[in-house]
Image (cartoon, rainbow, N blue to C red):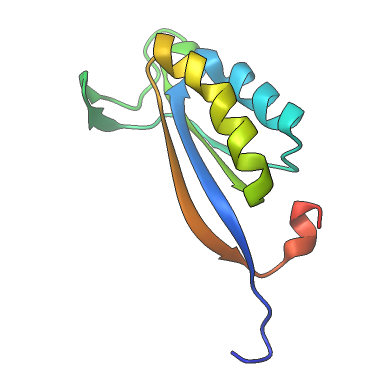
Length: 108
């Protein structure tokens, strides 16, 4: 793998109710994140018990995950933007170290 050049980024995995998707994507867009993936209909168990990932009444009631690869310098403003939101709403933000092969996809 000596000829393969990997670049270090942070991965954000943001889980919120579907009704808050626009808040999350606006925050990421304003912070300068170049792209993200959105996964709908999540299932899982958390502090409030089990959440089934099927459409009940509308898409706003579903859990979604938004995944983004982010340069280190964007982490602080993004996480500071989430602090007030998470104080009032359900949700979680996971942060992990990753490496990517095609850095050109992330604006650098």
